[in-house]
Picture 1 (spheres, rainbow, N blue to C red):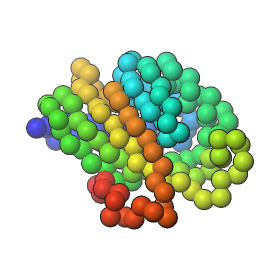
Picture 2 (cartoon, rainbow, N blue to C red):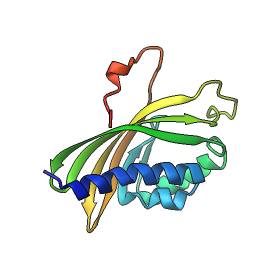
Picture 3 (spheres, rainbow, N blue to C red):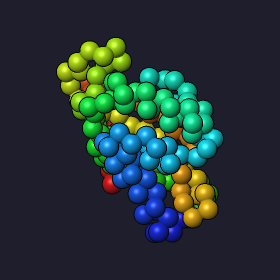
Picture 4 (tube, rainbow, N blue to C red):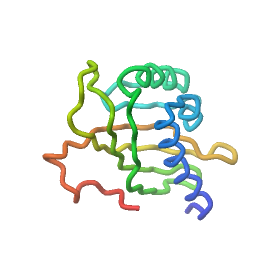
Length: 147
């Protein structure tokens, strides 16, 4: 239902997300979302709109995430219409701290769900929900994205 070039463009969002995060470039990160994005972050808070999304992440990258690096893992793309896709991306992160600033002893893993939409010639994230994976409970068989 989507072309090969659309799939490549959607996969590029994952690559740009990782580049932006690891460079702590919140302007680039915000450029990957729509102006009206609905984003639920890993702690369960809702960020409505690109400006709120960018401000929140800039604040977090000045503190909790200032030394963090993320690596994207598997990705699945399921077209819902020719202009809307459901995307899941596995990720891992190290170098971040707990929300209160204390040292985190183990790297985290998670999965983020995106609704991506065609916006002119680009694909952008219009909605997202991010969650940590509890590694002691969730086995590999329940971490779907594989490519």
